[in-house]
Amino acid sequence: MSDTHLPRFGRQLPEALLSGLRGADLILHAGDLTELFVLDQLAQVAPVEAVYGNVDGVGVLLALPAKRILHADGKRIGLVHGHGQAGSTPLRAQRAFAGEQLDAIVFGHSHNPYCRMVGGVLVFNPGSPTDRRREPRPSFGLLRVGPAVEGEIIHL
Image (cartoon, rainbow, N blue to C red; front, side, top):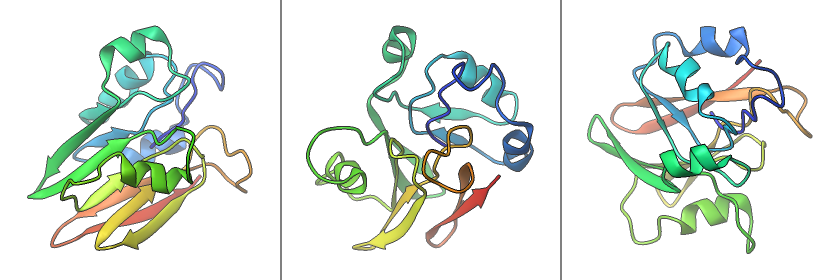
């Protein structure tokens, strides 16, 4: 998931999101949590890995890295928010891991769900479960790690 922007959109993550995450082995948050209590709520469902985004508070910036590479069942997954100046958000996310051998890149920032294979790498933005912006509905995503990494956008 990405771009929860709490407490701007409430003090709790949507129950439909938390229900959809039950059974997950790991939760990834691609930044713009705004406050660290979001990680506490998610950790009640499954272990969480996260990065900071461009609107996160000082506490989040001090607690989380700008990007990270995670290992899951032999696959390498890059996690980054994707903000910046030049190029599209998916392109900035890919450039953040230039030179790295990855199976997937998870990013946020735009609030627009995105799930495409680019040069053998899954480039995946789950959208936002709380701030749909120009999208018809809020969303989050599921990654399935097996012989390949596959992504699915889930609309709330």
